[in-house]
Image (cartoon, rainbow, N blue to C red; front, side):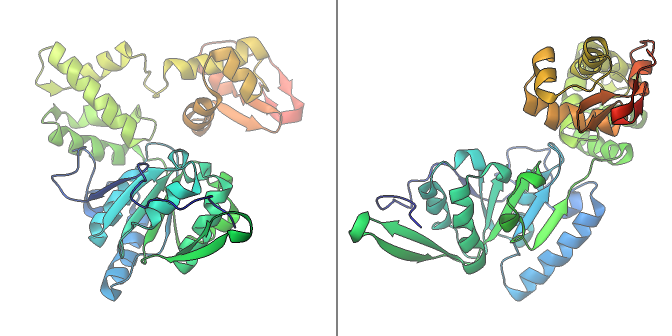
Length: 351
Protein backbone atom coordinates (compact mmCIF):
# COMPACT_ATOMS: atom_id res chain seq x y z
CA UNK A 1 0.00 0.00 0.00
CA UNK A 2 1.35 3.40 -0.95
CA UNK A 3 1.31 6.04 1.75
CA UNK A 4 3.69 8.78 0.59
CA UNK A 5 5.88 9.59 -2.34
CA UNK A 6 8.98 10.35 -0.36
CA UNK A 7 10.47 9.55 2.99
CA UNK A 8 9.41 11.41 6.11
CA UNK A 9 11.27 12.88 9.03
CA UNK A 10 10.05 11.08 12.19
CA UNK A 11 10.73 14.21 14.21
CA UNK A 12 8.52 16.30 11.92
CA UNK A 13 5.18 15.48 13.52
CA UNK A 14 3.64 18.48 15.31
CA UNK A 15 0.24 16.83 15.65
CA UNK A 16 0.86 15.11 18.97
CA UNK A 17 1.69 16.31 22.44
CA UNK A 18 4.15 14.21 24.40
CA UNK A 19 4.68 14.41 28.12
CA UNK A 20 5.59 12.32 31.13
CA UNK A 21 2.74 12.34 33.61
CA UNK A 22 3.51 14.04 36.91
CA UNK A 23 1.81 16.24 39.46
CA UNK A 24 3.80 19.29 38.38
CA UNK A 25 3.08 18.86 34.67
CA UNK A 26 -0.68 18.48 34.91
CA UNK A 27 -2.07 21.93 34.10
CA UNK A 28 -5.67 21.20 35.05
CA UNK A 29 -5.78 20.82 38.81
CA UNK A 30 -9.33 19.51 38.70
CA UNK A 31 -8.39 16.39 36.73
CA UNK A 32 -7.76 13.36 38.95
CA UNK A 33 -4.41 11.70 38.38
CA UNK A 34 -5.04 8.19 39.69
CA UNK A 35 -7.93 5.73 39.65
CA UNK A 36 -8.55 6.12 43.38
CA UNK A 37 -9.31 9.82 42.83
CA UNK A 38 -11.56 9.24 39.81
CA UNK A 39 -15.18 9.55 40.94
CA UNK A 40 -17.93 7.33 39.53
CA UNK A 41 -17.68 4.66 36.81
CA UNK A 42 -17.03 2.08 39.54
CA UNK A 43 -17.14 -1.04 37.37
CA UNK A 44 -14.80 0.47 34.80
CA UNK A 45 -12.33 1.48 37.49
CA UNK A 46 -12.37 -1.95 39.11
CA UNK A 47 -11.72 -3.72 35.82
CA UNK A 48 -9.04 -1.28 34.71
CA UNK A 49 -7.21 -1.70 38.01
CA UNK A 50 -7.09 -5.47 37.44
CA UNK A 51 -5.84 -5.10 33.86
CA UNK A 52 -3.24 -2.48 34.82
CA UNK A 53 -1.90 -4.47 37.79
CA UNK A 54 -1.57 -7.59 35.66
CA UNK A 55 0.19 -5.75 32.82
CA UNK A 56 2.63 -4.10 35.22
CA UNK A 57 3.38 -7.41 36.96
CA UNK A 58 4.21 -9.00 33.61
CA UNK A 59 6.22 -5.98 32.50
CA UNK A 60 4.05 -5.68 29.39
CA UNK A 61 2.18 -2.89 27.68
CA UNK A 62 -1.50 -2.66 28.56
CA UNK A 63 -3.79 -4.05 25.89
CA UNK A 64 -5.21 -1.48 23.44
CA UNK A 65 -8.12 0.32 25.11
CA UNK A 66 -11.32 1.76 23.62
CA UNK A 67 -13.10 4.52 25.60
CA UNK A 68 -16.69 5.18 24.53
CA UNK A 69 -19.12 7.75 25.92
CA UNK A 70 -20.72 11.19 25.55
CA UNK A 71 -18.56 14.33 25.75
CA UNK A 72 -17.34 15.50 29.14
CA UNK A 73 -17.45 12.19 31.03
CA UNK A 74 -13.70 11.88 31.48
CA UNK A 75 -12.31 9.88 28.54
CA UNK A 76 -9.21 12.06 28.16
CA UNK A 77 -8.75 12.15 31.92
CA UNK A 78 -9.01 8.37 32.09
CA UNK A 79 -6.35 8.00 29.39
CA UNK A 80 -3.96 10.18 31.40
CA UNK A 81 -4.78 8.18 34.54
CA UNK A 82 -3.95 4.92 32.76
CA UNK A 83 -0.57 6.38 31.80
CA UNK A 84 0.03 7.43 35.40
CA UNK A 85 -0.95 4.02 36.75
CA UNK A 86 1.28 2.29 34.20
CA UNK A 87 4.15 4.74 34.93
CA UNK A 88 4.27 5.35 31.21
CA UNK A 89 4.82 8.24 28.85
CA UNK A 90 1.73 9.37 26.95
CA UNK A 91 1.42 11.01 23.54
CA UNK A 92 -1.91 12.71 22.85
CA UNK A 93 -3.51 13.77 19.60
CA UNK A 94 -6.92 13.86 17.93
CA UNK A 95 -8.02 12.21 14.70
CA UNK A 96 -8.79 15.50 12.88
CA UNK A 97 -5.17 16.57 13.45
CA UNK A 98 -3.88 13.50 11.59
CA UNK A 99 -4.18 14.49 7.96
CA UNK A 100 -1.69 12.26 6.14
CA UNK A 101 -0.14 8.84 6.82
CA UNK A 102 3.21 10.50 7.46
CA UNK A 103 1.64 12.36 10.40
CA UNK A 104 0.68 9.06 12.03
CA UNK A 105 3.94 7.40 11.05
CA UNK A 106 5.92 10.22 12.63
CA UNK A 107 4.16 9.61 15.94
CA UNK A 108 4.27 5.80 15.85
CA UNK A 109 7.99 5.68 15.10
CA UNK A 110 8.67 7.82 18.15
CA UNK A 111 6.61 5.93 20.75
CA UNK A 112 8.62 4.26 23.48
CA UNK A 113 8.34 0.80 25.00
CA UNK A 114 5.10 0.30 26.99
CA UNK A 115 4.05 3.91 26.34
CA UNK A 116 0.53 5.20 25.72
CA UNK A 117 -0.67 6.68 22.42
CA UNK A 118 -4.03 8.44 22.83
CA UNK A 119 -6.23 9.38 19.85
CA UNK A 120 -9.31 11.45 20.66
CA UNK A 121 -12.32 11.46 18.31
CA UNK A 122 -10.97 8.29 16.71
CA UNK A 123 -14.20 7.89 14.73
CA UNK A 124 -12.99 10.76 12.52
CA UNK A 125 -9.82 8.93 11.48
CA UNK A 126 -9.30 8.70 7.71
CA UNK A 127 -9.50 5.22 6.11
CA UNK A 128 -5.84 5.23 5.04
CA UNK A 129 -4.77 5.95 8.59
CA UNK A 130 -7.06 3.25 9.97
CA UNK A 131 -5.40 0.68 7.72
CA UNK A 132 -2.01 1.83 8.97
CA UNK A 133 -3.18 1.34 12.55
CA UNK A 134 -4.35 -2.23 11.88
CA UNK A 135 -0.78 -3.44 11.35
CA UNK A 136 0.63 -1.22 14.09
CA UNK A 137 -1.85 -2.52 16.69
CA UNK A 138 -1.47 -6.20 15.81
CA UNK A 139 2.11 -6.64 14.59
CA UNK A 140 3.75 -3.51 16.03
CA UNK A 141 5.06 -2.61 12.59
CA UNK A 142 4.21 -0.20 9.82
CA UNK A 143 4.77 -0.56 6.08
CA UNK A 144 6.12 2.44 4.26
CA UNK A 145 6.42 2.79 0.49
CA UNK A 146 9.32 4.88 -0.78
CA UNK A 147 9.44 6.20 -4.33
CA UNK A 148 7.10 5.79 -7.26
CA UNK A 149 6.54 3.44 -10.15
CA UNK A 150 9.12 0.69 -10.87
CA UNK A 151 11.57 2.17 -8.37
CA UNK A 152 9.12 2.03 -5.47
CA UNK A 153 10.09 -0.17 -2.55
CA UNK A 154 8.48 -1.10 0.73
CA UNK A 155 10.18 -0.62 4.05
CA UNK A 156 8.90 -2.44 7.13
CA UNK A 157 9.42 -0.28 10.23
CA UNK A 158 9.30 -2.11 13.60
CA UNK A 159 7.61 -0.40 16.54
CA UNK A 160 8.00 -0.81 20.31
CA UNK A 161 5.16 -2.49 22.17
CA UNK A 162 2.76 0.34 22.98
CA UNK A 163 -0.85 0.85 24.06
CA UNK A 164 -3.28 2.64 21.78
CA UNK A 165 -6.15 4.33 23.61
CA UNK A 166 -8.93 5.47 21.33
CA UNK A 167 -11.75 7.70 22.55
CA UNK A 168 -15.01 8.36 20.75
CA UNK A 169 -18.48 9.75 21.30
CA UNK A 170 -19.76 7.75 18.30
CA UNK A 171 -18.75 4.12 18.62
CA UNK A 172 -21.01 3.17 15.71
CA UNK A 173 -18.95 5.37 13.39
CA UNK A 174 -15.72 3.50 14.10
CA UNK A 175 -14.88 0.88 11.48
CA UNK A 176 -15.49 -2.63 12.76
CA UNK A 177 -11.96 -3.90 11.91
CA UNK A 178 -10.53 -1.11 14.05
CA UNK A 179 -12.88 -1.46 17.02
CA UNK A 180 -12.30 -5.23 17.10
CA UNK A 181 -8.57 -4.71 17.60
CA UNK A 182 -9.10 -3.10 21.00
CA UNK A 183 -8.70 -5.67 23.76
CA UNK A 184 -10.32 -3.49 26.44
CA UNK A 185 -13.56 -1.57 25.88
CA UNK A 186 -14.94 0.86 28.46
CA UNK A 187 -18.40 2.39 28.03
CA UNK A 188 -18.63 5.51 30.21
CA UNK A 189 -22.12 6.38 31.42
CA UNK A 190 -23.70 9.58 32.70
CA UNK A 191 -23.08 10.23 36.40
CA UNK A 192 -25.82 10.22 38.99
CA UNK A 193 -26.32 13.30 41.24
CA UNK A 194 -24.54 11.72 44.23
CA UNK A 195 -21.43 10.98 42.15
CA UNK A 196 -21.45 14.50 40.72
CA UNK A 197 -21.86 15.93 44.22
CA UNK A 198 -18.66 14.13 45.26
CA UNK A 199 -16.87 15.52 42.21
CA UNK A 200 -18.10 19.02 43.01
CA UNK A 201 -16.99 18.76 46.64
CA UNK A 202 -13.53 17.57 45.55
CA UNK A 203 -13.24 20.31 42.93
CA UNK A 204 -14.28 23.00 45.40
CA UNK A 205 -11.38 22.05 47.66
CA UNK A 206 -8.94 22.21 44.75
CA UNK A 207 -10.35 25.62 43.79
CA UNK A 208 -10.00 26.78 47.39
CA UNK A 209 -13.69 27.56 47.71
CA UNK A 210 -16.45 26.30 50.00
CA UNK A 211 -19.81 24.88 48.96
CA UNK A 212 -22.57 23.49 51.17
CA UNK A 213 -23.43 19.83 50.76
CA UNK A 214 -27.04 20.69 49.82
CA UNK A 215 -25.82 23.29 47.36
CA UNK A 216 -23.44 20.76 45.80
CA UNK A 217 -26.28 18.26 45.39
CA UNK A 218 -28.51 20.93 43.86
CA UNK A 219 -25.76 21.88 41.43
CA UNK A 220 -25.19 18.20 40.61
CA UNK A 221 -28.83 17.85 39.60
CA UNK A 222 -28.39 20.64 37.07
CA UNK A 223 -25.15 19.35 35.54
CA UNK A 224 -26.60 17.02 32.90
CA UNK A 225 -24.84 14.02 34.42
CA UNK A 226 -21.51 15.38 33.19
CA UNK A 227 -18.45 16.25 35.33
CA UNK A 228 -17.15 18.78 32.83
CA UNK A 229 -20.39 20.76 33.10
CA UNK A 230 -20.44 20.42 36.89
CA UNK A 231 -16.93 21.86 37.17
CA UNK A 232 -17.73 24.65 34.72
CA UNK A 233 -20.83 25.66 36.68
CA UNK A 234 -18.93 25.45 39.96
CA UNK A 235 -16.40 27.99 38.68
CA UNK A 236 -19.16 30.36 37.62
CA UNK A 237 -20.99 30.01 40.94
CA UNK A 238 -17.73 30.81 42.70
CA UNK A 239 -17.79 34.09 40.77
CA UNK A 240 -21.38 34.79 41.81
CA UNK A 241 -20.45 34.05 45.45
CA UNK A 242 -17.61 36.56 45.17
CA UNK A 243 -19.97 39.14 43.67
CA UNK A 244 -22.41 38.63 46.55
CA UNK A 245 -19.59 38.86 49.12
CA UNK A 246 -20.19 35.31 50.33
CA UNK A 247 -17.43 32.96 51.49
CA UNK A 248 -19.63 29.92 50.86
CA UNK A 249 -21.68 28.79 47.88
CA UNK A 250 -25.12 28.16 49.35
CA UNK A 251 -28.33 26.86 47.80
CA UNK A 252 -29.46 30.47 47.51
CA UNK A 253 -26.39 31.34 45.46
CA UNK A 254 -26.85 28.24 43.31
CA UNK A 255 -30.43 29.28 42.50
CA UNK A 256 -29.35 32.85 41.85
CA UNK A 257 -26.44 31.84 39.62
CA UNK A 258 -28.35 29.25 37.61
CA UNK A 259 -31.17 31.72 37.01
CA UNK A 260 -28.68 34.34 35.81
CA UNK A 261 -27.14 31.78 33.44
CA UNK A 262 -30.50 30.64 32.10
CA UNK A 263 -30.35 27.11 33.52
CA UNK A 264 -33.49 25.64 35.07
CA UNK A 265 -33.65 23.13 37.98
CA UNK A 266 -33.72 20.27 35.47
CA UNK A 267 -30.40 21.39 34.00
CA UNK A 268 -32.00 22.57 30.76
CA UNK A 269 -30.38 25.55 29.08
CA UNK A 270 -31.93 28.15 26.82
CA UNK A 271 -31.10 26.15 23.69
CA UNK A 272 -32.69 22.99 25.13
CA UNK A 273 -35.97 24.83 25.61
CA UNK A 274 -35.65 26.50 22.22
CA UNK A 275 -35.24 23.12 20.51
CA UNK A 276 -38.37 21.75 22.21
CA UNK A 277 -40.37 24.90 21.56
CA UNK A 278 -39.33 24.97 17.90
CA UNK A 279 -40.43 21.38 17.32
CA UNK A 280 -43.79 22.08 18.99
CA UNK A 281 -44.58 25.46 17.45
CA UNK A 282 -43.07 25.05 13.98
CA UNK A 283 -43.51 21.33 13.35
CA UNK A 284 -46.54 20.37 15.45
CA UNK A 285 -44.42 18.32 17.83
CA UNK A 286 -42.53 16.47 15.11
CA UNK A 287 -41.20 14.52 13.42
CA UNK A 288 -38.51 16.85 12.11
CA UNK A 289 -35.10 16.02 10.66
CA UNK A 290 -31.82 17.04 12.27
CA UNK A 291 -30.76 19.30 9.39
CA UNK A 292 -34.09 21.15 9.37
CA UNK A 293 -34.01 21.54 13.13
CA UNK A 294 -30.43 22.80 12.98
CA UNK A 295 -31.39 25.58 10.56
CA UNK A 296 -34.48 26.46 12.59
CA UNK A 297 -32.62 26.99 15.88
CA UNK A 298 -29.35 28.27 14.40
CA UNK A 299 -27.15 25.57 15.92
CA UNK A 300 -24.79 23.08 14.27
CA UNK A 301 -26.17 19.59 13.65
CA UNK A 302 -23.22 18.02 15.46
CA UNK A 303 -23.84 20.15 18.55
CA UNK A 304 -27.52 19.23 18.61
CA UNK A 305 -26.83 15.53 18.18
CA UNK A 306 -23.86 15.27 20.53
CA UNK A 307 -24.74 17.74 23.29
CA UNK A 308 -28.43 18.68 23.45
CA UNK A 309 -30.29 15.62 22.18
CA UNK A 310 -28.76 12.96 24.47
CA UNK A 311 -29.82 14.82 27.61
CA UNK A 312 -33.28 15.70 26.28
CA UNK A 313 -33.83 12.06 25.37
CA UNK A 314 -32.44 10.87 28.70
CA UNK A 315 -34.82 13.17 30.58
CA UNK A 316 -37.80 12.06 28.49
CA UNK A 317 -38.50 15.32 26.63
CA UNK A 318 -37.52 14.11 23.17
CA UNK A 319 -37.65 10.94 21.11
CA UNK A 320 -35.79 9.92 18.00
CA UNK A 321 -37.79 8.02 15.42
CA UNK A 322 -37.08 6.76 11.91
CA UNK A 323 -38.80 9.88 10.53
CA UNK A 324 -37.12 12.44 12.79
CA UNK A 325 -37.30 14.04 16.23
CA UNK A 326 -40.55 14.20 18.19
CA UNK A 327 -41.24 15.84 21.53
CA UNK A 328 -43.13 14.00 24.27
CA UNK A 329 -46.06 15.07 26.42
CA UNK A 330 -43.52 15.91 29.12
CA UNK A 331 -42.07 18.65 26.89
CA UNK A 332 -45.49 20.30 26.54
CA UNK A 333 -45.86 20.30 30.31
CA UNK A 334 -42.34 21.71 30.79
CA UNK A 335 -43.05 24.66 28.51
CA UNK A 336 -46.66 25.11 29.71
CA UNK A 337 -47.95 24.64 26.17
CA UNK A 338 -51.37 22.97 25.80
CA UNK A 339 -51.20 19.64 24.01
CA UNK A 340 -52.94 19.73 20.65
CA UNK A 341 -53.95 16.11 20.85
CA UNK A 342 -51.84 15.12 17.85
CA UNK A 343 -51.71 11.37 17.35
CA UNK A 344 -48.56 10.60 15.41
CA UNK A 345 -49.47 7.06 14.42
CA UNK A 346 -46.39 6.46 12.30
CA UNK A 347 -44.12 7.14 15.26
CA UNK A 348 -46.25 5.49 17.90
CA UNK A 349 -46.23 8.70 19.92
CA UNK A 350 -49.40 10.23 21.30
CA UNK A 351 -49.48 13.94 22.17
